[in-house]
Image 1 (cartoon, helix red, strand yellow):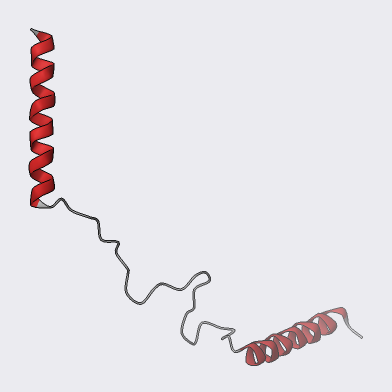
Image 2: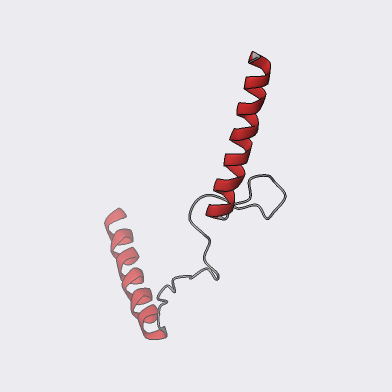
Length: 78
């Protein structure tokens, strides 16, 4: 048997086996179908974490505390 002919037959056999495996697994072998990406699929809707905001009462307490703090710092600086 000729070496070139043997290589050609082996390549044809490899292509046939590749198509058979792709058909069994369900993945398109060539780029003819939909492209699939490897990895983790993206979520349908991104879930955002809500951050707790300050209530008006909390904001007022914080304002008083900060004013007190800065007053003490000014007193020490002088």
